[in-house]
Length: 396
Image (tube, rainbow, N blue to C red; front, side, top):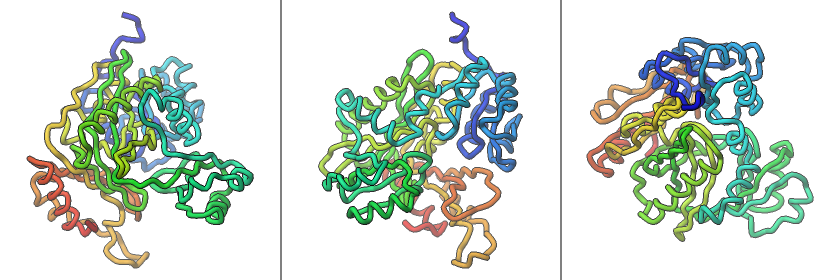
């Protein structure tokens, strides 16, 4: 067996670029399997850094920190898509097994390259991105095909959870939104007649083995994920097959090792479009922590440690409820001190599983945790999630 294919066994250090909640849940999964974890993150209060064996408090381009991580860790992954590609390349040059490599991450970092990638494989996937236009100068706006309006203008880089996005109905609104974004490169996506959104969580190993999790149906509020329900209640069997097949093709075309999430739009006509690629574990995959044989975070550990991938079967229907910092504030007074939410009331539902992310300061719109609501049936899981939301004062 080639050296590069030898599994990295428990007891070794695994490295994670980024110390947010995804890094924290990765760390918990890795430690449960017997690994040690080194986090690189500039935030001294990072949730993952607080529990990892080693926290390198430095920027992602810090040469000394990268050298230390490379010396300590046999493999490195990332918990967010905007880590500099050169950081991944530098770690790989230092002899670390990097999964995923920079080529796949780079495509997902920029909406322009992401759209081009999805378009290139449209025929093989039997689906593609929504109609779109790249906005890089005023002349493009002046010559715009007006069938793209109304649309959603999105900055090409660094936008997430609804940030860096604006709905526009006319050329006047489009010009104003582009000005508001500082005239940075953007993508204008045609506003589609959406029925619902789903996401596919897919993993690939070093040996080209690919596994896909059951599809999650997602509801967003203000651009932030609100709930994910599995099995997807509105998805028919033919649509499910197409989404699963597209996910398997895309992860291989990216030559991607690790865990990846792809979001899809399903229109009222039944047509499916690929919307976005996230090169990391995903909020919509948190249900796997309690409802799947292998959680997405254990799967991430397995992939980067070159171990066989785990079973993705769903053990029970589930509805995941996101918990935002708004829960800690009951009034509209900005000077109000945060109050701990009514966890005991929420957990009076015995199938509700609470996960908090160890963030010290709750803020409006900030992801603080999630609750997985299990059920013997899909209807029961959804009802439990609705009851938990009501108990916590979250609008249904």
